[in-house]
Length: 144
Image 1: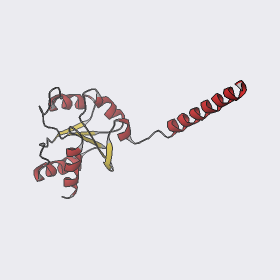
Image 2: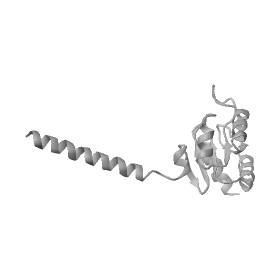
Image 3: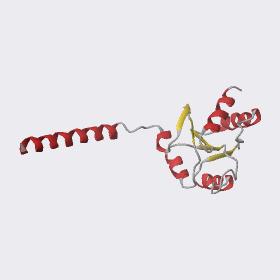
Image 4: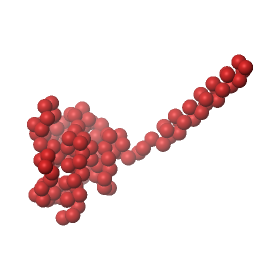
């Protein structure tokens, strides 16, 4: 009986080891996965609010452009556009501030984004509070 238990434990351990190895082997190579973003178009991903400390990971993941769709002062403790812009510049990232009101993007917002994307270098990461406004403005810009 003791031998069966030991054998069962060993088999279970090997199975778990194999599962975790497969998960490690299947690690995503999409830069969006490295920064908890969702890719919605080639070279364009969206996510919720970033912190200043997130920018180094964003740059390391291969993004070259950061687009802030969140108005300053929307929530206490949120980093300002100027703070994000300064850190983005320090890391060699292009930064665009295109604030979108909670009510949603306007046609002018979409035109501003479309113009920014024409000159964007490399993949872009856009953010707002949850990522929804960043996604909506991109869809509108794509229609222009």
